[in-house]
Amino acid sequence: MTAINVFTVAPENQARLVALLRQATESSIRHVPGFVAAALHRSLDGTRVTMYAQWRTPEDYARMRARPDASPFLAEALTIAQFEPGFYEVTDVFAPDTAELAPLTSVLVGEADPEIVELEARLRIAQLRGDVEALDELIAERLLFTGPDGAVGTKAQDIAAHRSGAIRIREHDPTELRARRVGHDMVVTALRARLAVEVAGELVRGTYCYTRVWAREDDRGWRVIGGHVSAVPDE
Picture 1 (cartoon, rainbow, N blue to C red):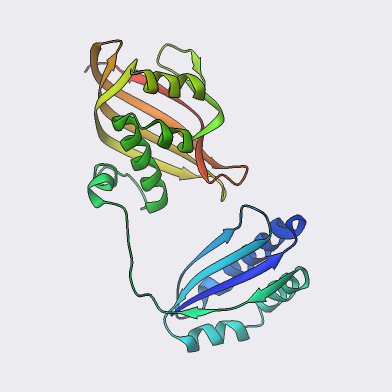
Picture 2: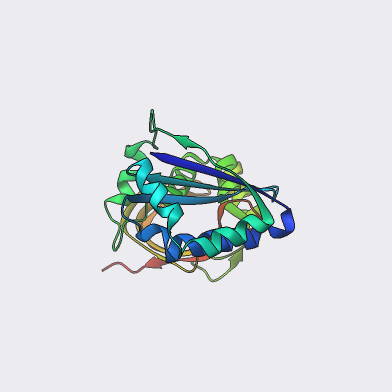
């Protein structure tokens, strides 16, 4: 069973509501027998927060609502928001093309993190295709990124290079991916990959290591806000 609970809130109280629901879920709800998974969403206009939660049975959900340790958080949430519950069953599930995820999923070191693997996969595909619209969506406006030569590049420079064809990534074969979450809205990734890059008409091959900082800022979703790439010397 899927419970989709929509909270309507004043924009100035949205962050507080998210914090309360997060506390309730982390400290109590996720420990209740029958809990499967949950995802907390905030609207970009600041007026809604939605909790998408999956439960084994409706009875398991009802037992969670009766738990006294979750009640204080939920009670306080209802002092700043209106609550509209809804109960659903899944009819279909759709996922990204596994062929696009496989090159990164297969080299991930550590715990599985599908959300971050998908972000890195989207960026890889955008680079290979020279898809400037996708790159624009995935890269923060005030990007701080240091290239192999030590120069700091900007988003505008990166987009312009792909748009003009000055840089074309012809091959991108990941060999290792690591990810570390820093709180709820930031992730650091380390990616090692063998690349073939066409620069001003000349093809350059080599192994490179990327460090990227992904963050959710300004309600724009996950974007790269900073990072570094360096060439790995030939062994």
